[in-house]
Length: 351
Ligand SMILES: NC(=O)c1ccc[n+]([C@@H]2O[C@H](COP(=O)([O-])OP(=O)(O)OC[C@H]3O[C@@H](n4cnc5c(N)ncnc54)[C@H](OP(=O)(O)O)[C@@H]3O)[C@@H](O)[C@H]2O)c1
Image (cartoon, rainbow, N blue to C red; front, side, top):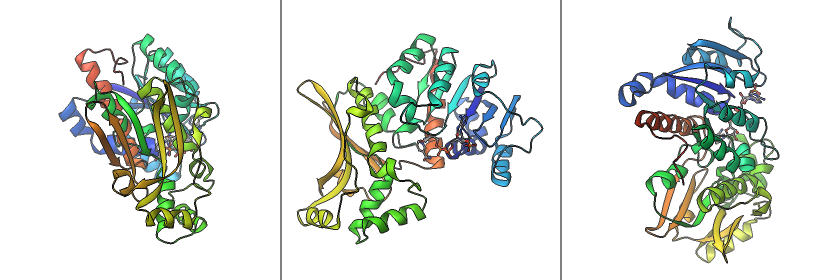
């Protein structure tokens, strides 16, 4: 029985909770995976702790009905660090908002958990982009797992594909469309919309944030490029080392000129080696229509990995969403469970 603490209970953690509630019997029957949610911590929407386990369906109903967790007897203010260190936490699910400058509060949550020998599963890019090598070493030293499939392409297994399925291959080059918002905007512009109208439509559909800077200026894609450079090419790269151009200067003319030459403008995140150095960059690129990335439209994501043994391998799928990212967390939970059942060292699954 795994005791799970959820720190952050927004879209992604609720997506996971929905899956855990709906699939409890199947997870037990098929994988022998049994869980108990022992705590839920939010920023402003209340906290709940119950060592006997909280009912996931009831938690979701409360969020839907009241927009928070205040209506329960157990509701009280809690210190997330106490919850994380508690003997009633085996696995921390960390899904607080991404902070790119310092990685907080997620970084402190994850550090505390790993030091206390708790497994960690997260979809929060901030702590990774600021401290991935440190957190990996902490997990190794503590003999626990630190997993983060959801940080790139949500539940589409972009990381596990390399870690597990392509094991033994060398990743020589990575090219990806890893930001759905900008791909949606570029797709709308190709249909004739102006940049401003396409952005407004993305905001209306909830694909873009009210403040779209992180997406349209290429920060989100740069973070992912940086993480992939560290994971796949052992680079010691900082976010600030990623060369970055967003899509705000892309015009109708740029798009139509590219099309007339058999190419499509895409915001591409790229990682490769050049003269012994790893380079990571994000920029609008005219991709030949024959290449798989050129066919990725709307909010969809894709990554092409160039490998030594197989040439190009492209993975395509959703890059965001509640259930989609909940699936990423679930796949990490099941990986921890599998390693535990096999008696394997949970931290030692290299990329
Ligand atoms: N949404 C996606 O499709 C997606 C995909 C991939 C990765 N991600 C990443 O996954 C993470 C979660 O995303 P989300 O969409 O679920 O975000 P969200 O809906 O904004 O939820 C964030 C949660 O964290 C809580 N929180 C904020 N500060 C906290 C603190 N100091 N201590 C404890 N809890 C705190 C919030 O509580 P309040 O609501 O009370 O403030 C909320 O419950 C983010 O890092 C995001 O970048 C998201």
